[in-house]
Length: 331
Image 1: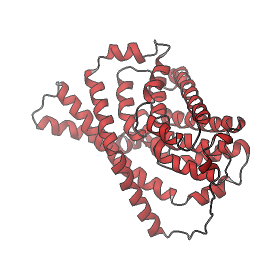
Image 2 (image 1 turned 135 degrees about the vertical axis):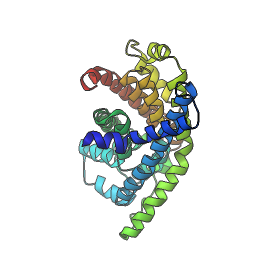
Image 3 (image 1 turned 90 degrees about the vertical axis):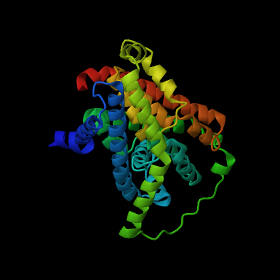
Image 4 (image 1 turned 180 degrees about the horizontal axis):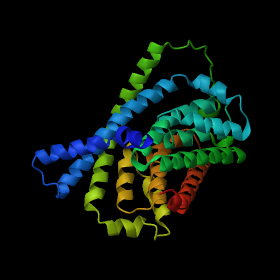
C-alpha cells in the first residue's frame, strides 16, 4: 500500500509514462537526448507544481492555527532546550523560504523570546517543513526524507541552543531588540477564513517560486542528460573526501526554496553524487542563501551573523558526512 502511495500518488509514475507516450507520439526519437531532457523537464515540473499547490494549501490551513501571537504564547511556556525543540518543530508548519522566515524571526525577537529559540525557528523554517518531507519522499523515498528532516531539526535545535549559550543578544540591531510588541486579542478565524487564507498563501507561494522551479528543473534536466557522469563522480562522488564541503559552499550563493532545489539534487544523485553531498547541498541552498544572509544582516550585527553562518555551515557539513556514513545501510 505504501509503495503505491509513494510511486503513484506522491511520485506520479503514471505521469512519467504519460509524458513519454505524448513525446513519442509527437515524433521525437526516444533515444535522443532531447527526448530524455524534455521528459525529465515536463514530468518534474508538473509533478512539483501539483505537489506544491496541494501541500502549501494543506500546510497553510494548518498554519492558520499558529499566528505570531499564538506562536509566541506557545513558545513562552517552554524553557531551555525544550523551547528550541518546540521552536524548530513550529518551523516545520511554516512553508517559507529563508528570506520569508526572517520577518517572523524579527517578530519573535521583538516579542522578547530568547534569541536561541528564535534562531531555531529561523534555521528550521526554510530547511525543513511538511511539504519538503512529502516531496522528498516522492523522489528519494521515505527513509531518506525522514533522515533529512531529522538531521535538519537537529541542526536547528543545537544551532539555536548554541547561540543561546553564547549570549549574543547584544548583537541584535537596536530597532529589533528595543521594539515594542503588542499582543492583541485575536478573533478565532472561521473555517471559511482558514480556507481563504490557505488559498491565498498557495497562490502567493506559487507566484514567488514558480520561476525557481522552472530554473531548478531546467538545471536538473541539463545535468541529467548533458553533464558526463564521470565529472560528477570525480567532483561529488564518495571518493572525493571534500565533496560535502564543496557542495555546501556551492549552495550558499544560490537562492531557491526546497521545491526549486530538489530537481537539481535528484539529477546529481542519478549521476552518481553521494547522498551526503546531495542532501547537504539542499540544506545549504535553502538555509544559507546569499539574499537571506543580506536580509538577516539588517536585523543582526556582524558577529551574530558570522556565528549563525558558521554554525549552520559546520552543522550542514557534519550532516553530509553522516549521511554518507549511514547511506549504505539505508539504500
